Image 1: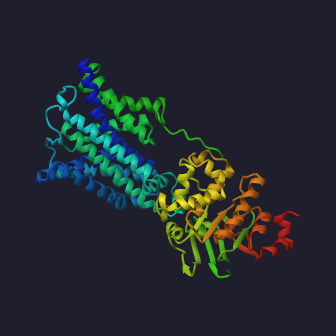
Image 2 (image 1 turned 120 degrees about the horizontal axis):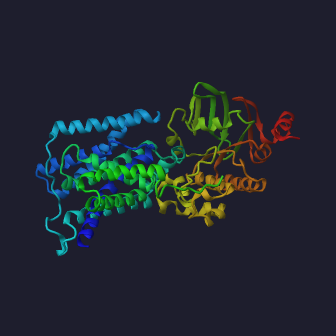
Image 3 (image 1 turned 90 degrees about the vertical axis):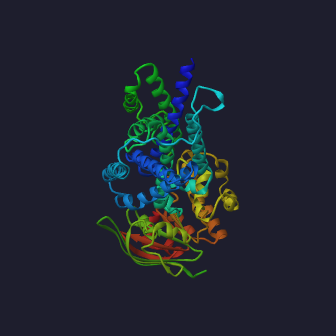
Length: 290
Length: 238
């Protein structure tokens, strides 16, 4: 029973990371109707920036905050510089840009930092908190960081005028322009937020999977599965899906299929969702009267 | 009262390679109601879209003495031109209240908009009852009211209205036109109205233009057009 609980809680911790990255995917999807294949590599690159800042002597939390800010700005810059020229064309050029970003970021990270696997610091103490032995401090801390971020994002979209403007721009760009919203900038902001969320996910997962240019490929796959389970247009669904996939993967890995085959869980989930319920568990069922 | 708020000269517009407007001249006096009449496909909706920079245009559009042709839609709106588009442009997944807040989003947050929101609920009490409801679940008439109220939240000096009667029962249409008259009188906002329902439009309007295949065919005071033989036979149906 103790092992089960430990596995379950550790699943929640990685699930929180999947949830964050899935949320980043949903945010870009709402602005572009496309899945950003480069989201994982963006998060990886952000994590390297954090690593550089820590190496340069910055304490962990200032480095964390600075990384979020840099990633936010970089996300906006990528949208304005790389994506704006192809926006409005068909889906294919955008997807090519996403894949291009993926390959370039991966190669540039390997070129600058080499493909050596490095340890990444955790801000949380190494012995378990509160004298219990079910969950490590880092796992507990990662859950805390994820939840704090989710609450902040929710409050931003739900209660601020800027959040409302972003929702309007994603939902109905033409009407948004007609009430004076600068839709292009709202999309850029969405990219910035997605990159900042991804950066947090990267920094939380790096102490577990270690830092290397390919660290996010598996995580991104789980995030895809999470976003699909929840319904790609539903932020809450994505978060639920993240925790669900994390726990499922951990329990199956511990009791059923073994650690080596864990990644197939993500693929199986993706295929199962697409076959059985493509809109996901919480996919939008919008009531509309004409 | 008779100062020109909007002056349009030689307005041409294209959808892709197809030219839809072939040089329109018209103007809208401050505080007045001006109607653009015409059959389906005459270019009325395109005219409104052209004014807001939503299609490719040529020609001069001056608002309050300032050229706005070639400006971005959101910048034109921010000058005080509100547009209720074809199809109403409602944010269907958001609530009634969120739709209204979006209408005034360039003017500030919840607190700044409070009194205006109450004023809109005064014009349209039905919207107040439905304030927390998802806008997509409103009836057609309620959605039209919401679209007008949302546009007024901008505090515009010019309101562009595209077919407010579309798809609504005559009784509902009459109610909406009644409120439009009150809004024009009380808010001092000029209205440029596009309508297929010529009889209703001419009753509300001070001036009217008849658009035929992308050109102005007849212009004049609404009262005169009501009695014009050709207009009566083709558009009023008696």
